[in-house]
Image (cartoon, rainbow, N blue to C red; front, side, top):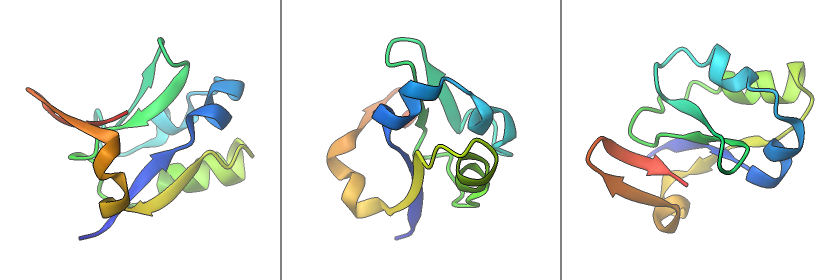
Length: 87
């Protein structure tokens, strides 16, 4: 098991900055939901590089993304045809 980026939607929705989606090196790993007005992480794509955490904490100064043990996310992602998507 390993750590996954976890976005706090309440904090993220307040800023609407999209920086994490821009700087994530893995395509389609962090996306933006217009419905939630927040970023979300595709669990099956996250490589735990923590670049998003650095961008959110240091550049955007929002502190909305933390690395979380994947077992703690079990009730927060659903299986879809394209993979596991964190909600």
